[in-house]
Length: 144
Image 1 (cartoon, rainbow, N blue to C red):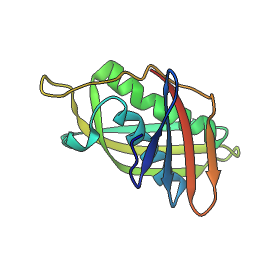
Image 2 (tube, helix red, strand yellow):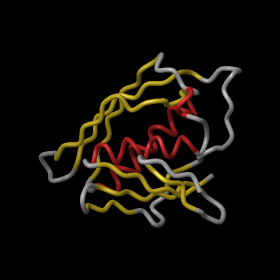
Image 3 (cartoon, rainbow, N blue to C red):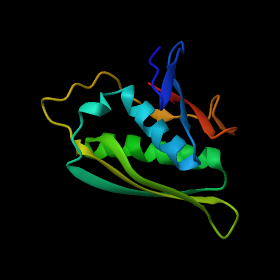
C-alpha cells in the first residue's frame, strides 16, 4: 500500500482504489488527481512544461469529482498528456445549487523516456465518497 501525506492507495481486488486528503475540497480533489495518475506513472518525475485548463460542472461534489478525474483520463488517452502538478484548482457553487470546478494542470506529453505502468480506463461511482471532517477526504475506485 502506497501512502503519502496527500493520498494513500488502498488494496482492491481488480481495480485501483485510493483516498486523498486536503484541508479544502479543492486540495482534496487535486490530491485525488495525483493519486489517480500515480496508478499509471510517477507524477513526481514529470516536468511542468505544458499547461491544460479544465472546467467541469456537477450537481453535487461526487459527480464533480468523477467529471474532473475523467477529464484527466481524457487528456492522457487523447493527448498523451502526463499530469505532474495541479497548479490551480477552484470550486464554486453555481447559480443552480451545483458546483463548478476550474483547474490548471501542468505536465508534459508522453515521450520515449517515460514509464507507464498502468492504465485507468474510467472513474467509477462504486464506493465513491466525499467526506468533510477536519478537512476533506475523498475515496475513489477506478477501472484499470
